Image (cartoon, rainbow, N blue to C red):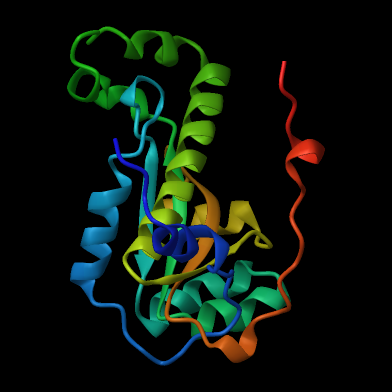
Length: 196
């Protein structure tokens, strides 16, 4: 496979910024569909694909989230054109006969082991949340990922105590440059990586 060009690297990583404020521009539903269609191709273990995404587009939907938010996140959520609630389904294994057809019995080990089920769903759902942000940036959207919320409250409000659980939140839209902080440093290779 050929490597991407510098413009793509800038779009996704080097020039991309986590957004705090948003321009009043809608994100059409077809863009959200394209976003999911890109992110779903990112790899997960055993192709388990546990991520579930709620796209909160209306003011009423976003207001349902507000009571669960840390105060610093309220304006970020209310002002975002779309807020993606990135969640994961601990019953992902029920779909493995379709998603992992060469081992249709693979779901049994997750059905038997609650800790393995939770760990696998959380890890791979997190990966898929990262793919969502990369895909969003490839489509020209800005992202504002957030923690800083009451997980149990979000689960009660949106997932009704079922098998789907929130992981993190991500504002999507077109960022207002006036809301950006100065670019913070990142660790250098030698500070974060080891070659053995």
